[in-house]
Length: 313
Image 1 (tube, helix red, strand yellow):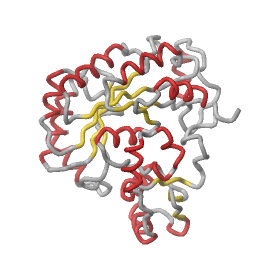
Image 2 (cartoon, one colour):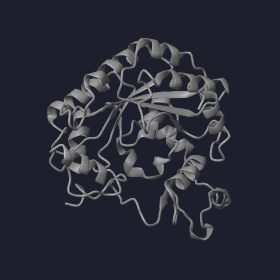
Image 3 (cartoon, rainbow, N blue to C red):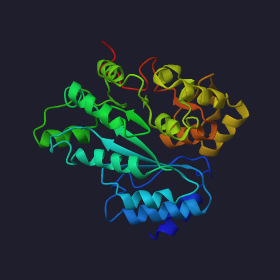
Image 4 (cartoon, rainbow, N blue to C red):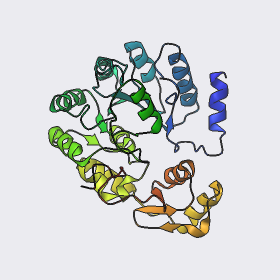
């Protein structure tokens, strides 16, 4: 459909909130910076910006960010735009077909020409025994110096991923196919030690918030162990914005998305609901700036929302 029609559908969607709903664009079926896609990316951002919207806009890419792309992004006045440069350091083309050197070049271009546009090293997926060597961690640290922040995360191991890798004769990366991402404790520990005081975050929204100097729109401050690596100034920003929502507010939002209001609990750091979808939880989460969890899938202390593999030994 035409770009203006797509933008109109977005801003008139019942779940969209001006200046509040965090947005991502062209990140499921394609890459926003591919030659046949990037004009639609720029045009959609310009149309949203012309509406005066100040929402976060996350642009996640593995491809080339050119000087002319940055120039066009820099002309935006309202949207909080963050370019997340995905990099894994994996050199096996059966697993990672995109040359990792592209990420460094894109970060370098952004570092040289971007001011208003924020840039993040999106280090993912980190897989035990595949791309967690000291050499690759050092390379990631070097690249992080070009970025406003680094976000690191593990692998969403899925049946489709395992089936594909087996089809190209890659040994199984992990035994389990869990609901949450896998990033073993030992790997995280080595990464955090190597990065020292360089800004690095476990959650995407935390890195984005830091890059823009605002509070985390996903309310991770309510889950204190997630924040133990955050810069002190960012913790202060998130602490100042952290307010427990009222029961009336939460129940109103729950009704809006069709959740059972009799099965909701509000705690000091998070809200618990039942029989929910991710979309329902995120709607309440973004409206309140408060974490929303489903009772069937609790976040266990100290694991940062990750799967049990690598954390139970």
